[in-house]
Image (tube, rainbow, N blue to C red; front, side):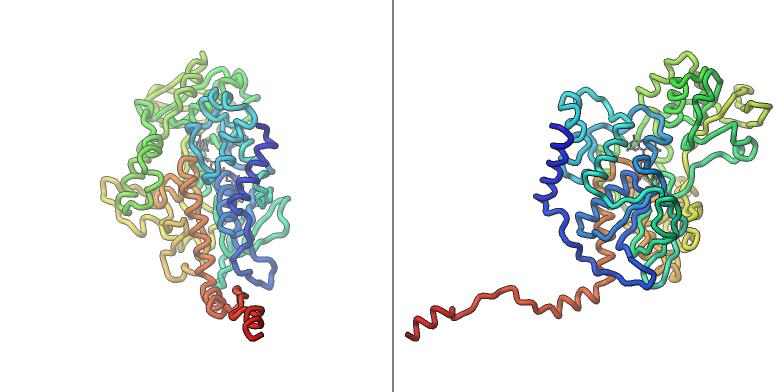
Length: 479
Ligand SMILES: Cc1cc2nc3c(=O)[nH]c(=O)nc-3n(C[C@H](O)[C@H](O)[C@H](O)COP(=O)(O)OP(=O)(O)OC[C@H]3O[C@@H](n4cnc5c(N)ncnc54)[C@H](O)[C@@H]3O)c2cc1C
């Protein structure tokens, strides 16, 4: 099978499912212009999958916006530096149960079933190519180089989205529902310890999520701070790019070995997580946070096979300072001078960190507002996560915020405590996307319920046109 043949199969499958039926949502009027039923912010795998999920719900007056140029959404070809995805290749996600839309179908259309057998995990660049294909074969309504700057809530149920960028059709969009599919850092920000931020000029360090000029680091000596998967991805990437020495510093005395995601994938924990009580959800996520995701075995093997690889365990950074062109790091093992530092210390989640939410964030209910964790589990990092509805909607901590937050949904990593590993990890998407699509459609329906029910009760269009007694029959009888 070729890609053209696969495209045809997708079209046939969708036709068999009567995909593309007319929207049932009542159009909304606004003096300022067109009102989208839903604007999805973020054109990564989540945004694309949700767009498809909404179209299946026959909610079609939708738009996806993404700040990046077309084809460069998400981390895959920007700052991700691993060779393959970490996820098992057989996991399905944004295909939403349609076999011809799976990564495997797309892969086999090009490389055959044997090609599928021959790969262990999904090559990173190919995952991005698959996302490009998915967007194009489904003709999803995405515009690129459009950044959401601010959500301006209104009392009439229509949000003004202030946007900018070379792809922006104007300076604002109007939307009844807004889904923030803004990625792993989209519920907060990447975290650089203040010791580094305050004491070093930015030319001496970068977070793993930033572009790094590895060409300029050829032959140099650098350090990576962190013991998770990204730390080793970056170490390996740097060494492959010709960096002479990479020292990885890990606070723990042993590398993390357990990957709780693998347990969750097999035990029902991902798909059934939303049925747990708040106490159980919190306890699960407190446990999850204790285990940083370990490096994959192949990445560790590759990185540690380079002669320039060094690993320092039990080696938190106690101090950093700039000394001429170099950064000097103090760890319990001594002082080390490096040409550059790569910081792999993860992210922080808190709606207060999001500029686009600044008009509404004070109303957003957090876990700390709704649940008091027992002392041995309580963690301010977990407490700062938004307390979302089972359908990913922000909830208000006060009466004033209820209208303002109505119609705002968070399908990013900040949903972790409320909805489990759903947004921002492939493992949960096939369960989470239908959930958010259905929750958004429910809300659109309920918002218009008076009108919709009124139309139902007033409906008087005749469908049945038969007559009795039949005209010819009664004429024959009387003759
Ligand atoms: C380095 C790395 C490796 C990962 N590897 C795996 C893996 O192997 N397996 C796995 O299951 N998960 C992995 N993940 C986790 C997750 O799958 C990815 O983060 C994935 O990209 C999430 O998809 P998404 O669509 O939710 O977010 P993203 O792919 O990040 O897409 C969000 C998009 O929204 C855009 N955006 C954000 N804010 C705005 C705004 N205000 N206006 C307009 N656009 C905006 C972003 O620029 C981005 O293009 C990895 C994550 C990272 C960071």
